[in-house]
Image (tube, rainbow, N blue to C red; front, side):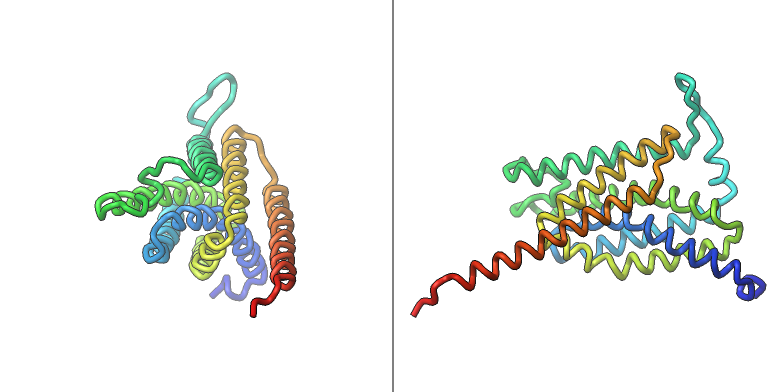
Length: 256
């Protein structure tokens, strides 16, 4: 009740929600790209599991907030560079994201690539292979959920000292992710050029995580501004392609 009557608390809550939603875009993009590799009837459930796991991980990390704060303390020094557990987790997650995005870009550029368990098992796959693909994709989502959740909670801890505000911000953020997951996933699935753009975003995010793990602070505003600019350009390209398609259809002679 004391916080509810404090204007500063409301400002902190609003600011933190905006920050958490922006940080959640990375998580949501990865979930959308991965779940689109599953059969259509499994996608919504996989997205729900992935985002639900993100909520559980964030709340679990909040309950260990005093431990999380200690994760920024140096535990390893190599060639004069100190690394904390947070740094090592960010580097590992960034390397995985770069590897995964590069692999997916290769698969999109080379349509004749050999199928693997991460492709959903292929059209002729059996139940066992399809089940393994589903489990593998969920496993990858959980792995990146951990990385993004850790980054999210450390950001929250740096913005406010009130656990109540952090919990509300996390719950609201995950609610937004749940609301946006299916529309975003469906939009990406229906627009192949957007798939490549989203994968390039993941590649950039992975490189940013690695840089931060090595102590290079990359302003998030620059990263998201570049993503927003690219998305606007791609949106204009999509409008242009549709306009040209309508013109081409209008020029076609009508058969009688």
